Length: 125
Image (cartoon, rainbow, N blue to C red; front, side, top):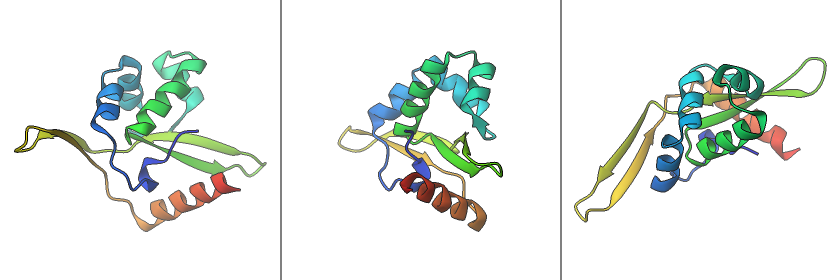
């Protein structure tokens, strides 16, 4: 299951971000997810095999670069969409010559925060 970066309190590791950004399929997914998309839509748009797209989404999620949004369908079941979840990724070096990464996120309005909470509750049920 893909972790929701919006609800994670931990900052992503530098290596997780570098691994995700070094992957051509992950970069293709990031280009397409400015607006929420389902895995099926990503498979078609990015021309990535189904077995691969979920691994790439997991890699992006571990790096806190995408977030998962679940919606309940009126007829039952739910649909999961994935959306890019950053404005900027900053990699810097401190005075001790250690690298660090900062992922700057877009602000969320109250409705989006509530949707995140409901989505997370659905995972718990």
